[in-house]
Image (tube, rainbow, N blue to C red; front, side, top):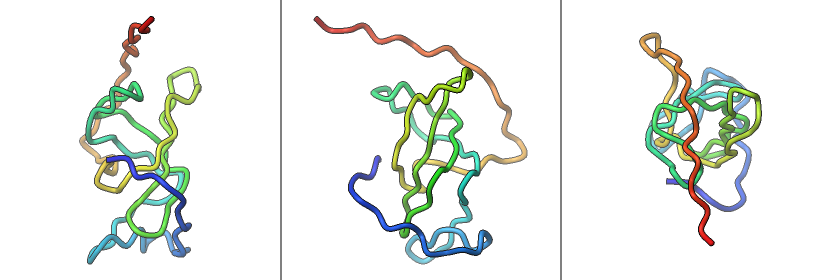
Length: 105
């Protein structure tokens, strides 16, 4: 689910501490690549798309930029840490073409 509104920047300066979410610490840091966990067709995104964390907020929210292979921004979204996951050693990168949605007249 996409979070909305103004957010406080995460006060943690130690990258190893990560984001405090409830009772656990999630080690997602700025400029880290993450994987989207669910489809967001209204943004042209699919589960498995890779984005870059550009801002970590206090709580469990992160700002993630998803870019096309050409470097153009596809979406810049505030997401919860449940919307993304860290890239693991068993993940393989792939490319896909965007599906153009028909415009309604």
